[in-house]
Image 1 (cartoon, rainbow, N blue to C red):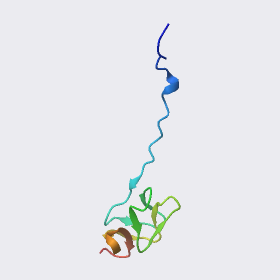
Image 2: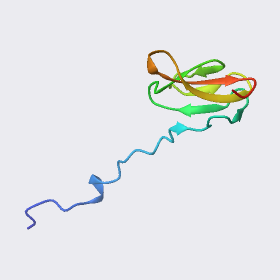
Image 3: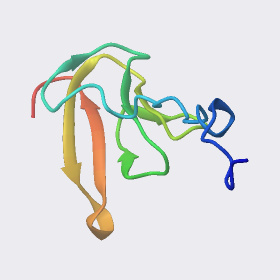
Image 4: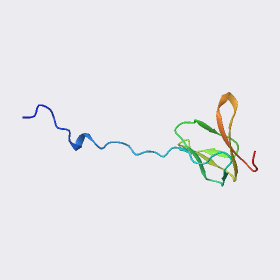
Length: 86
């Protein structure tokens, strides 16, 4: 008789799928309205001018233009969309 339970498949296989978070568009890139810029949990990066925030904290472009990552009030990181390169 075995003194301990054998490691079976019932104790395996419960790992969650990766959520594909992160920055999808980078500084200086051209974006169109509605394109996803950052997928994140919480507001690591805040929405600036021309950028909206979804219910799951996803940042997306409201209008077409060029992306600019910059620091703002209280040292927070922001992303904005401008009509011309900055």
